[in-house]
Image (cartoon, rainbow, N blue to C red; front, side):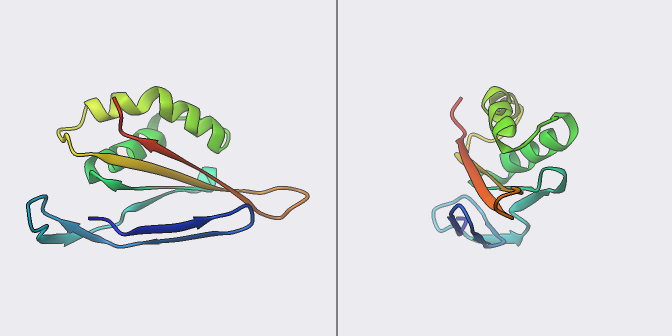
Length: 122
């Protein structure tokens, strides 16, 4: 189970995640540790989420290799069109939520924040 806590407001972003991966059985036994946040520095964005690690990582890999986006709204539109293709290529049927959080630089305000949540619904 992933512990993902975030507070997203117009002027602030606070994000905390654990790193523990558990075996998907009745008692959720610990398996290993890994990152659950993937940085997109060219978009000033983070991809993170809860659920299947395979889906999150494959989505991150897809975005890094095949997506040209101009901000988080553009990335969100692409996600809605292409996430199902990435999910169908995965071996898991586990549920997953993808969170895409971005800091947006503004002239009037030095930093504003926006985010989108995309559920694995295909």
